[in-house]
Amino acid sequence: MKQLNAILEGVGSVVQLMMSALSYTATLPRQSARFIEQCYLIGYTTLPIVAILSFFIGTVLALEAGYAMQDFGAKEFIGSLVGLSMARELGPMMTSVLLAGRVGSAIAAELASMKVYQEIDALTTMNIPAAKILVLPRLAAVLVMMPVLLIIANIVGWFGGSVVARYVHYVGISPEAYFAALRHYTKFKDVINGMEKAEVFGFVVVLVCCDIGLNTKGGPREIGAAVTRAVVVSLVLILVLDYFVTKILL
Amino acid sequence: MELSCSKTRNPFTGAEANAVGVTVDHVSKSYGEGQVLKDVSFAVEPGEIFVIMGPSGSGKSVLLRHIAGLELPSAGTIRIDGKDPTLEETRERVRVALVFQAGALFNSLSVYDNLALYPREHRIGDDKAIDQRVMHALKILSVEDAARKFPAELSGGMKKRVSIARALVMEPQLLLYDEPTSELDPVMSATISEIIGTLKNEYSVTSIVVTHDRALALTISNRVGLLMEGELITLGTPADLKQSKDPRIVDFLNPRIDIKHPRFKKLESPEPKETKETT
Image (cartoon, rainbow over all chains, first blue to last red; front, top):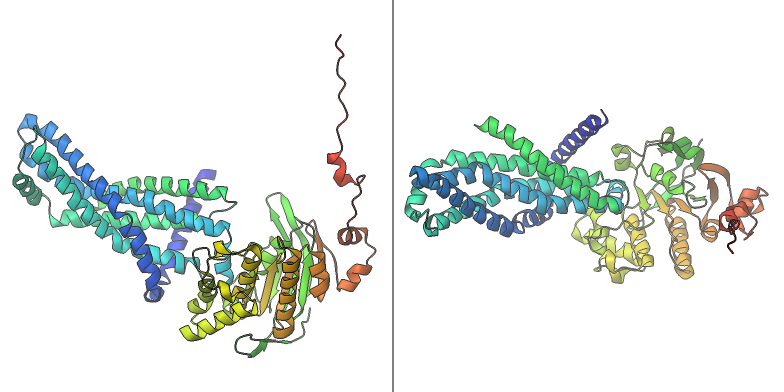
């Protein structure tokens, strides 16, 4: 019962924070510097790790698919498998997981530290809502940067698959055949579906991490606990939401 | 309680505005089982310096956070100029600034940006006007050379002064200080006391100062309240306090080291335990 209360309280707090942040949307043009800074932090600094991981996800997918499909003589479909898997599932999922680990943890740590060292209280006494200057620019930035990260993740992942398809001897498919299958079975709608997923996951990750950071209580030790909680809750939410969003989009 | 009307003078524009008074009416606060504030009541007149004194852990800072609207009391009411300080509309109408004990400066912003944040967010003037206001506040506190530095590069005393300058930029009608002289050397403490006194004399800002610094309290205040274990045990002028015969007040103002006092009981060496003699 106590845990259920805590969950409901957490959901209420997140929804309240979202409503509060969105109520300041009109102030976003005046916060362009903060928005650009967050775009840089969320997008540019996450890009290298997203690219590296996506490349290797593409290679592993092609390896596994090539190994399994060689017995059926269906190796020419490897491109379609890698293409669809990256676009619809692994691209948005892995990008969001990386966002939670790389950006979500940083957001939770920064806001928890501001809370513990009374910077949030100072904002309150100045009548400057934290939701306006700390949460809104981050939410706007993640909505803009997630599709960018996802497109790059997809392209690099597809390319990774093509490298394996070409150079691993038991797969041995030409890049032309690989990309022909990929183009034939991976529709524009699949890419858009993946983007929608990524937008939902990214928005939720940033919102939850902001909320956990802003609700930190206690001393400096709680900053670490807040970061751990933010990452764990984000990962769980990504997986749970993945099912429901996929069900809706199918 | 009726509060007399006085005017504050804006340090930047020279414009006069009504000073605000504060009423704390039967306020209690509990965290779980522990009661931190017990039925505290007092009123602060517009334009006065009111000092809340008391030993560490007596609930002074908690009381100040309640006046700043950062916490809700478990019982009782607090009013600033007749309005509830926890409401956003009160913050929009009455400018209350709090000088935090540790400064609470924004670590990611320079000193200049720390001060400029309030006028920028509330769109008070153009860039030039904001620049003038920020530099003027830094000059009042003699920290204009630190404008481009970050909080991590400042000493404790400078952080305190920057924190007061940041409060000043808000053109406060009510200025709250939480332990403004803690962790400072005697010279810096005297400087901060002078600054608080000057802000009151020059601009008639209503000030509430929380401290356990007797020298500060008895020098700058118009009235002093002594808080012990969450209870306001006395309220009066510094002269009243000095003349008090209440042993708790006398002990707080003139502490003597008496090794027989119960608080030293723990330091006494324990009784030697009987041990079996071995042959």
